[in-house]
Image (cartoon, rainbow, N blue to C red):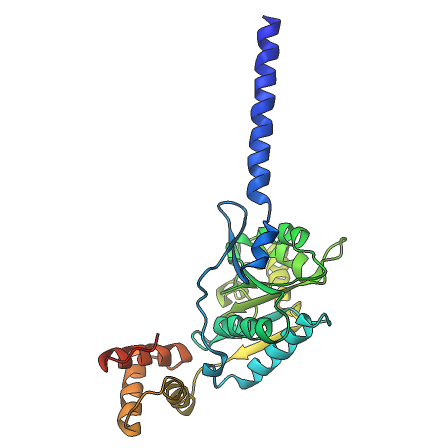
Length: 288
């Protein structure tokens, strides 16, 4: 009987070791991937990063009307790529004005022109708890990493902001100097106004909200993106047409572009791009 129990215990121990090995394999970052790929996405299913083989980005020259933000992000990323001090960045503001497109375009330009060992890792806002693991595994004297979170925001019950605080400020343990955090958000303070204006006046509720609002203050650089004016929208459309060498009659072309924005109920860089896609398809013009 005792022998059978010992065998069962030994078998359970072996199973436990196998499970631990699988778990560790899933969590291990294969550093050889950095020799081949420049962009990665955090895969929450396997608790590791996976390479992006075909990157969804547009040429930085197509991003117009956001010159100040573009210049600031290029400079900050250049400093970082050169091994100088740089800030975490929050890109906030109107939808469709090129926040995430700018991050991806700037990374590409700096990687190509300044430092080929600059990497971009996209992290979903629901996976911020992975930040400590990434910080522990990305420390490298030769490589630079930008952790990028698109559409970052927090609801009242979301506790992921605590992991983000570690990224932005560090804790007792110093965070690696070769990792930066870039985030985009439609909300300047990262939480909806409905929560800020909540009637719950309890001390606990107020402190939780105040702590989340203060997160945005921990970004060294804020870049604001605002709604398109009529002229800015027309300039974006014309710039797209120029870049893709599209022949058109200006008045008719802009008339169509503005009717498109009216039908959409908004003007933005995204709406302008969607108009170009539709216009070129109607004219049998291939641009992609």
